[in-house]
Image (cartoon, rainbow, N blue to C red; front, side, top):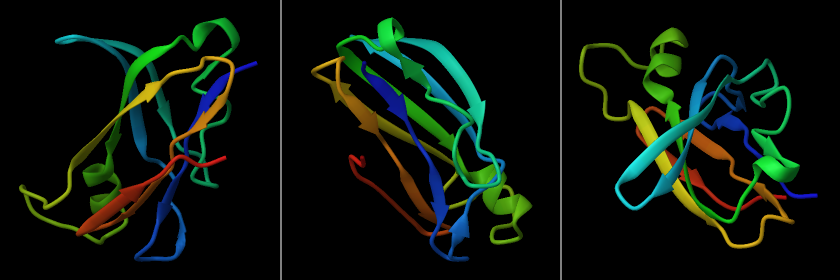
Length: 117
């Protein structure tokens, strides 16, 4: 059974990023449809998969991580304009029967992602 999951790690503080709001969109051409909205728990993870089973379909998705809100709340960034605020990660799901884990590693001035397990 396929599923989609994520987590967020704060590489500047060396700990999970709790309280990060994440929106998940299904993308088709120029159309974005929001299909999930979650917040990371104390372990920087969501409480369950974002999608699982029949809800995960082959196609293009986009996760939007509201990093700016987290960075302000953690005292790492201030001001009206931040270097990193909303971080979109667009990715494809070529086989809906697999597990896709899309983590985000953040700091106030950098981020990275990869396909995890």
